Amino acid sequence: MATRIITVAAAKGGVGKTTLSYELAAALDGVLVDMDWDAGGATRMWGFDPTRAARAPLLDALERGPGGTPPRLKRRANQPSLVPSHPDLSASRIDADLVADCLQSWAEVWSEPYLVVDTHPGANPLTDGAMQAADLVVIPVVLGAREMDALEAILADFASYRLLLVPTMIPPIPPRRFVDRLAALADGRVAVAPPISEHRWLRRRLRRAALVRQPNPGVRVRAAAAEFEAVAASVKEACDG
Ligand SMILES: Nc1ncnc2c1ncn2[C@@H]1O[C@H](COP(=O)(O)OP(=O)(O)OP(=O)(O)O)[C@@H](O)[C@H]1O
Ligand SMILES: [Mg+2]
Image (cartoon, rainbow, N blue to C red; front, top):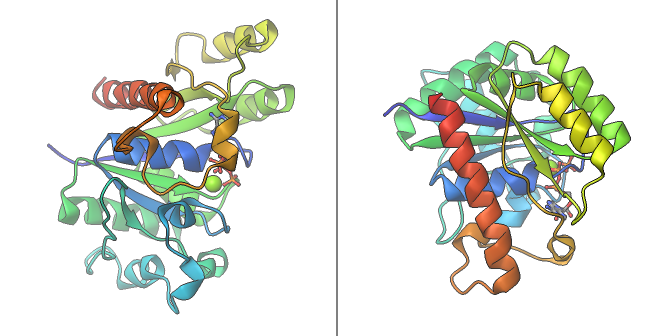
């Protein structure tokens, strides 16, 4: 089966992109490509300090172009295979089309079932390229007034992509008006995944192993992992639909 490319994007920062990317990559047995250059991203979550590397393997591979060798994958038990991020990505002058071509050609070389790309918030060539290459663009959605406004704007911008909205950080009693607004925005045309609850403990947690791969999960982790697994099932369905 051809590799599916899943790009996780959002108009706003701090809405759970990295957490979702990490869990999806693990749940789908895929490769996580970290295109977010900020500290505290997926690469650190994975346990690698991107500033320790003199050069960015991702940038080097992009410079080699779509015919060149892909970046080497970092592998560890219970964690997604990783292409790490690097601070130099922020200053890169890479063209979005080149990013898209490279991702598609690396996908063929790696022949893993899924590539999951985590992105830096807002428009930039890396995100644009990852979206162009994607079979599915996954958008975490927080139920807040400003977040819904941002969603409305990006739904218009992203109309040409196949989208999956993932409600996340959802409190035990979700505010009705936002639930209704989300339903109106999706309007039966955009797929909506099962929600991920607000898990306050996640913020304080130093993680390496993905929640969906924890060897001895407690009750809380099991519950959260089941939610991410359900979203992974929606991703598979949306890709094939
Ligand atoms: N379902 C959740 N419930 C509670 N906290 C969460 C949830 N998902 C993620 N978080 C926490 O919210 C914070 C932001 O999440 P994350 O880093 O995944 O967002 P992001 O969109 O990647 O942010 P950025 O735009 O900075 O890259 C983190 O502390 C994370 O642990
Ligand atoms: Mg992030």
